[in-house]
Length: 255
Figure 1 (cartoon, one colour):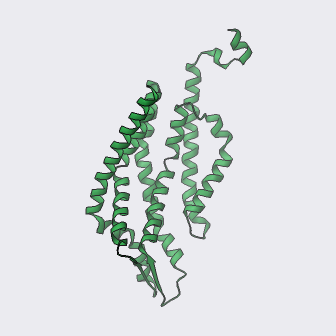
Figure 2 (cartoon, rainbow, N blue to C red):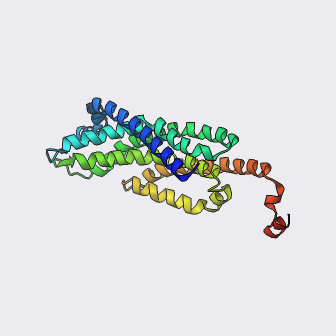
Figure 3 (cartoon, one colour):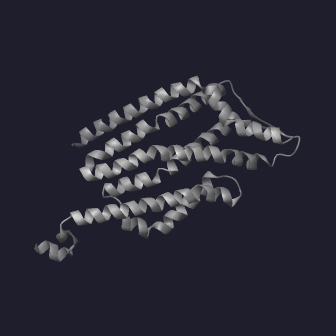
């Protein structure tokens, strides 16, 4: 395919993904009150357990509309995740062989539950984060959270968890595209683990180290699982390639 054909294909796939997200956003708009109640549930649970008053506050006339729009788009991203993940996969597929397509398809199928599992983990972690961060409010004091700031924090946290769980899928995709080898992944495991811990520390704003480990350990396990798969793929690829490709450059040139 020429560069123009690739760009047209990318445009078409972006359009399909955008339409799917838009349809999901409509569903989110119709169920906005239910979703908002679920997202703000940790605040009200904290208010019941403590004497301080905790609530969200809409400061401007446009806050309510912009928040409903953001929450709807967020729901659209979650609901349309199978479609936009498939569009990413479909854009990569033409560069793979038939065997690589069959192997990679398993991981593309796994990307949807991995993404949803990351989002679910974020929802599970959210009450703990809210409890710790707002637990410093003195008894009898008012803690009125700006609705925009609170919901942006929640939505970014959920999406970050979901995208973090897609790490093994992209690693295998880069390996199948001959961009990243298993040896390079093994050599770089130490800095990668450090990056994962830094990411977990940034995305878990609570001061205790257990929250950071709660996010970092599953991602590290997924990273090494992807490395193991890439090792198997590289071995199969090495057996399928001609033996002269493994010779030194001077010997290969004489052939």
